[in-house]
Amino acid sequence: MKQNTRPAWLIAAAFAAGIAAFSAVAGCTHADAIRTELSPFAARVLSSTAAASERSSATTDSIQLTNAPTPRLAFATVDTVQDELSEADRPAPMNGLCPADMASVDDRFCVDKFEASLLEVLPGGEERSYPFYMPVEGHKVRAVSQKGVYPQGYISGKEAAGACKASGKRLCKPQEWRNACKGPEKQTYGYGNERKPGTCNDNGRSPIGFYFAPNIADGSAFSSNKIMNDPQLNQLPGTLAETGSHEGCTNGYGVHDMVGNIHEWVDDPKGTFQGGYYLDVEKNGDGCGYTTDAHEVWYHDYSTGFRCCADVAQ
Image 1 (spheres, helix red, strand yellow):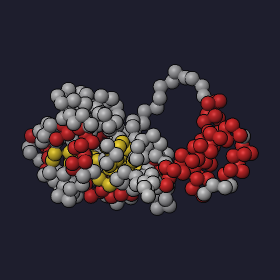
Image 2: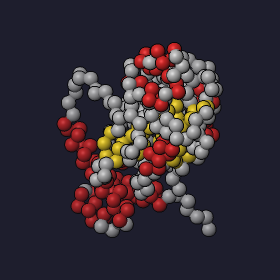
Image 3: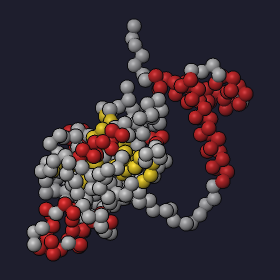
Image 4: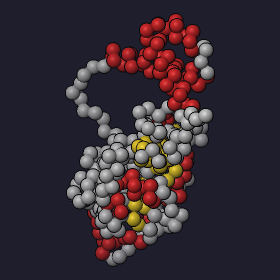
């Protein structure tokens, strides 16, 4: 007998969707009666569907058009918990076998669509945005993947792995990272085989040159941990960019900014980050082939960031 290999949550979600459609015709009284006969999980799915419908209706009634500009986001926001992989029984909407904040790479693994930003987890369980320009020693943080925020720098490979784990994810393996970067077309820069400066954030200004020119002249700048982790560096205009702001820096998988913007740690116990950053995407390899392995996993500076991967849902 052929076994049904579809995940239980997928079957329940499909069933609940059918019930929701029936409810629209039969009315709320019938829906309430049906809900009492469902399994607890299916009942939760149906209740969530109904609540979402009510919220959508209320929002539609109150929308007013405006010419005011959309506020510019700088930090990760706290309202992203619903997109995290740790909610094992949440159906992943319209995204293959991956959660909504991740892209599916041929249904073999999931990768964050955007470079990671951080939320700090406070002693009472509350969460707040963590400054992207500060090191994270002594803070309990977890990774989120959002568009329109500044990604986290100043983080070590070990800390990046912990932030992924805290969100039910993991660092990408080096080959996974390269595959995701090249896209289904297997192109050197993701968007193409030839570099087009400015398509990604790959030709920014040097913040160390701006703030610490005398230290560069005497040879002390790049060996100074204090200088390399100065909070001013990634706040200088023309350096770090908000995630997704370079719209052409993507590929057929729908991942963004894998070339340039900020280096991304991968799962290598010897210490490796890939992809380049806003000053360099070619010195240690071209685009998706860019690899730096000269630092231990405990190392961090203004240019080191990350994104997370995860196994597909089973």
